[in-house]
Image (cartoon, rainbow, N blue to C red; front, side, top):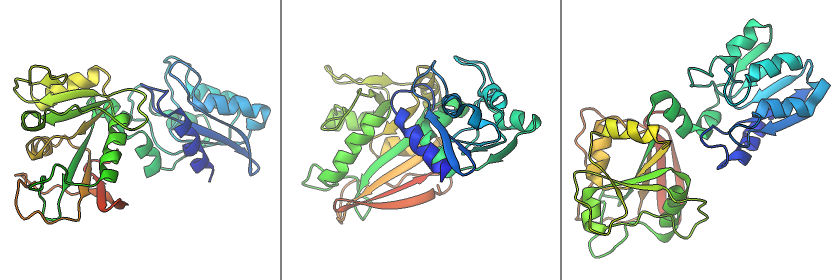
Length: 312
């Protein structure tokens, strides 16, 4: 329960901590919450420090629940492990480990100093920072493949503009508002000349809009052309601070990323339609791609299937 409270607190920092992850912390002593906090902005105190300061002397002998293990390195702020030890905490329960090779290992430091430590290895805690974790560990963006399909696997329905319904299209605009960059292939650019903006939703900022391929782009296109090898382009985007990338292109771009094993998460919006004809999504792959943690959700009349190729 206390770890869930920490996860809820972490979400309060969503959208303001970039490029840092979101983290929440709760201090519990004798079954009572005596302090809590969350990371709000880069350069400001981390969640554990805020929670421990709120607890004061009541932190001595208490249990600290935190969504990610306390950092052990000097960055914009001192190591959180120092604050935990100075507060006299008896036990630390971490929802996830830190994949950063510099900051990670905080639980080991605390355990060596005599603090009881627990790695809860919470899927929810890892998912909460899925883009950041891949960006830090793999030095590339977290790649989400989104496709709209009919029941017979078609990516277009003859005679109509849309494959899926209005609710699904709104969900896609919400996704656009949450990621750092969007991408399509040149086939989609030539066929649709898409804007790729987040419209009709609360978007604090617009994502970068990319086109993968050799070009040329239409004369007045506002997309960025990325013509290099996918691995190189993703590394360059990561170096520019792009932590998450949503692929909205057609089957050709999707197949390219899947063949290169560069897709982390798949979102399939399935319409209750049998098209009978039209282009289909049938990528040629060297081996089957199995999704983990598959979930299904009704979105209007459509079905959203989501799963991970690589768990964060």
